Length: 398
Ligand code: SF4
Image (cartoon, rainbow, N blue to C red):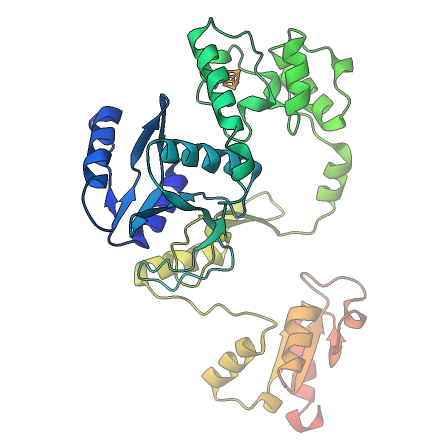
């Protein structure tokens, strides 16, 4: 709903001459205010005008009158026209025309994902406008029939309709909590991607996942969720445990969250573009110690200084160039010593260093000297042997 409001506000910002029909005071007040504004002479643009015809009340998103004729725009946060939008605009138009407005054109404004936000609240180009005028014509005769049926339902007793797929698509029904009061801590809807199955289970009298017979569940992930729910015990996958146990130390755990607003908030971003907004990287050493890696501190320093860090490291050439510049050392006179055949050794040689010594300690793995290109100048057992090798070789002899 909040996102829908932002989309509506962005659409309104494209019509600075527009006037909003207030939501305070209730529908009667909105109807009166709309009637008064529409009675004003000349061109007019209204946001959320309230219109009524045949006991049906609608609020159009944008209503524009030019030379006595009306253009009606329905604004949606979706990225394309959906079937439900055709019905929606058809009913809005039927009411508006019935209320006496000469509606010449009906449009559906949906999000154009090609739009790139240039900043400063400029949302020109955010919406694509689909002309619905012809698409809604075939429905106009049907609408009185739908409305008569809906009014009969409203006047009658409570319909006996089970909760089902219609409660969530195309929109979540606001009466769901009434029709399906939460009766269990573990409702059958917990099963992922299983709206139809949950509906069948409820139809068969199962509201709580723990009451469902296991043979009603065919998918392995559903059966696993059922077992964990019934036993209240986590279930660990032994194959996954074997793979995880084989990972080398230290281990890094990267976690991040993204946001993708329909109305982009940051310059240079597109609608619904996933923007990372929170992340963390934890490191676990072989003794089980958990610690934060440098990333969290960089993020903290960026926040405190309000500056964007230039992040670089091995094997980026810039990393080696920065180190050499700090020592005023020509690349050809430098030797890199490291236990990482890819980041330390190959990276240094690609950056133009005179030599790179791979030591068989730390993260070195058997065969690393042949795994990466370019290969190390020499491979030695440890740091002491690396120092001996460097002393024995002048830079010109590399
Ligand atoms: S939740 Fe809404 S759509 Fe579903 S049965 Fe109840 S009233 Fe009908």
